[in-house]
Length: 507
Image 1: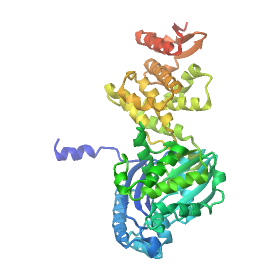
Image 2: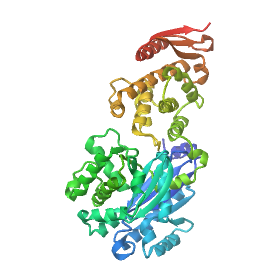
Image 3: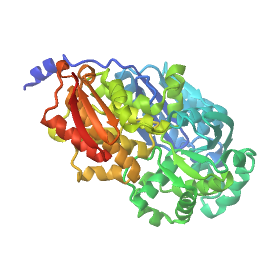
């Protein structure tokens, strides 16, 4: 195809019809542009670009922004605005945090940005506003959060109390990794009294965190999570929703805080650009785990930027269950029928009754994502669908939930029992959950064989338990019949349930 023909063919491609909103997080250590597509319950970032500038480096000593970084920031910001214009992003907002907020020349820096970037809204967040946005971002992924949020940046540590998804008191402490290093003369051994002294000024910390969860936000803490994942050979490379018992978090923090730069370089998963920050981030984590008395640590990839995104959502969208919303998003993008998932939920229910609310929620989500491989090559549908579901951007999915949905979807596409890619999910599931996912996948496989992916044909068949028998009842006048493949798949499903199979025709 020549260039002219290529131009003609691309002219017919559909244009983007989902609005894009963008936010720039102008932090003490880094500046990041994120562009979100659409306005669904789960943020979908289609651009995520970062530059580590160290804008707040030297702030403690000079009281001013790092002069080397301010010029670089202007250049980077011009780049980000150009990206936003090219993508028709509206709105684009810049959120400046601790460094700009606290620096003597912060206002002048903002004025310089406004002059260079006319029409761009620049907001210098107060400490309370920063904590609030971070909390709202975390709640997108953990809607029932209970415990304490800790958002660690370069200049500050924001703390927020959570109680069953409601936010409580907040505090901002000068314990960001850059600022802590300056306050202690870059000596990690001198951080303990500084950190403990600041944490002691937060009277509600122990009551809010004791025996509950500690939710960690911030790039330095996510880097610690990646180090731990590499050390234990964790099967899924997703920091969001990664969890550690308090003892493991404490031990990891102790090891990293005591490590030399040369030692840190050899840690698998340690990012080169954050090596200098990691010991200070670890020092704060160790003291925060102690001060809160938390039972475990949960890492969140959501923070201020996602909190900004959440402000633009309607109350009805915010109240959606994040797992079901994510499943619905996948179904609408990759499935064939908007009506089939709900029919599958009802069709599979008799196999699993009684079930807990959590089990019912997973089964419902699995029915919604069960057709996401419909447009893939037949030889690779099981594997592609497995990875698409396992790695989806759903903000509210715990890792075992991802694994359950991925296994059920792969089995719906008749994945080979010994397929190597399934091992990732198998390691995240206990035996009972894995078995349930496999049974559900086999039931979905039978349903799709009967229905060809249509709710009309599925309505012509029912599946029920009768004592020790699994009974598939068919209405042949509607286009379904008990051929060899139907008989075989019904028998396979019955065997998984320890039942005998019966296929009967309605009269």
